[in-house]
Image 1 (tube, rainbow, N blue to C red):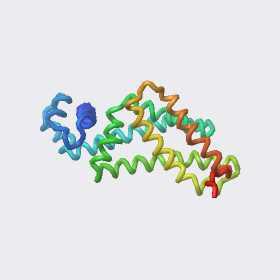
Image 2 (cartoon, one colour; image 1 turned 90 degrees about the horizontal axis):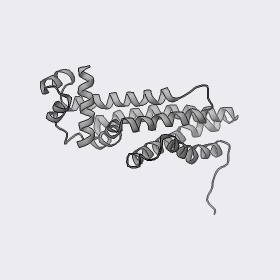
Image 3 (cartoon, rainbow, N blue to C red; image 1 turned 90 degrees about the vertical axis):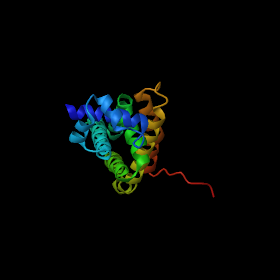
Image 4 (tube, rainbow, N blue to C red; image 1 turned 45 degrees about the vertical axis):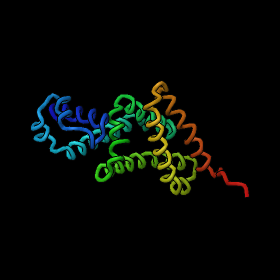
Length: 200
């Protein structure tokens, strides 16, 4: 309970000020515990930031996985996963800010944590793209292009989430539908061999 209290306070403060400007004094004040207690439970500032990233990354992945429904077709699984992702961003804005803006800005071991998070997300999306291709009898083509397409989709989803922080009037369902219309329809064309080429 006390550890969660400290982590919640740290995420709020890191989100507001960034890693370098955030102070342990303010985290202590927001958490309502002494600085020695923070050091005792979670270590120094660098350790605390790393634990914040790890916890929020785990919560984000869990939210997305919980949103996936294996009984549905791949496109609907992805849509539900995207909605869960955007709901997480809406509900835990501070968490997303720490994960997507602060951790990447600081770099080093913190950015490595985000790279691992992104890799797991790409694995999930790759599986959905390949499954969709398999069902259309295009296994080899889907397996070849799936990982690259998944990277593109995850990157687009992250960028759209960042944009959404300043445009919260758009619902998570609409946001997920925009991305599906932009990306998934193109995936289908590519998987089925309908490829755009520049005019010579």
